[in-house]
Amino acid sequence: MALIRLRNPKGPNAAEIERKIKRGNALRQGSSWRGSQGILLLLLVTLGLCAVAVWLYLAALDSDITETLVSSRETISPQPVVYDVQCSEDYENYKRYPGCTPQKCGRAVTDGVVTSEEAQALRRLAERGLALAGSEGGASILDLHSGALSMGKQFVNIYREVRGRIQAVIAETFGLDPTLMYLTKPTFFSRINSTEAKTQHDEYWHPHIDKETYGSFDYTSLLYLSNYGSDFTGGRFVFMDPNGNRTVEPRAGRVSFFSSGSENLHRVEKVTWGTRYAITVSFTCNPSHAISDPSLP
Ligand SMILES: O=C(O)CCC(=O)C(=O)O
Ligand SMILES: [Fe+2]
Image (cartoon, rainbow, N blue to C red; front, side, top):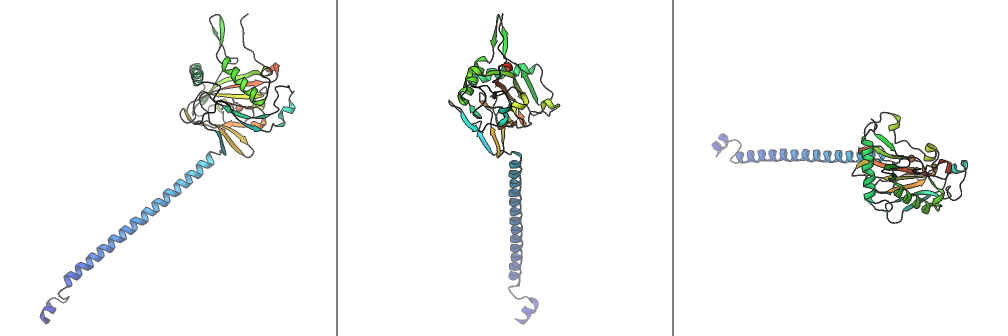
């Protein structure tokens, strides 16, 4: 027995024990590898969550929108959705025209006044007209003034019908006499894309008050000819109120209208992708600022 012990000092189970030790080591190594894998995974998940949080924060900073008044996914019909806003003092500095000068101010949106076929026809017209030229920057306009187009022996007013309906819905919403409100200039098609601005005429995104910018406006209406989200991104209309920003998302055939004073300070977001078509159609209470439909003698 002693000899055997001498020849094999580790005893009869030494090989077995060694195997166990090796297996133990291997297991420990494996579990420490698995441990570091776990830590790595945890790190990655934490990093991912941090990235998402930063992205959400930046997105919130970028889109300073407090409220979406009307989204492009909903249909506002037949009645417009109306948001009352207190009239600014702007109107006191202008001559008042009873039956037209705003007594009640606000903003409204309707999808029930212009059909999608009409919007499509007007968009095609804008596409063709603007294809003849167009700005090198991102914003182009086509001013069709009264909207008259010669055809044979007469004028075909391309948007007389549509304009008449817009006039009627504005009058009804703000309690006006439609015969005392007049189409005024500029009345124009706009095309906006994401091309970088080349001149200040391309800088459509600045906050402004229509009554100050255009002088004659008392009521502004915008007829959208393309859809936010599918035809273009960015390019939402933003009312900039003292307590936050409120958007109207364009949608083909949608008419958005509002009193033109500083109670409706607004801007258009920069278009980030695609092309946005719209028509600005505006009305004045001052007959001397009216533009009339041309007629043949
Ligand atoms: O196109 C729009 O949504 C707004 C345009 C505008 O603010 C304007 O024509 O004065
Ligand atoms: Fe404007």
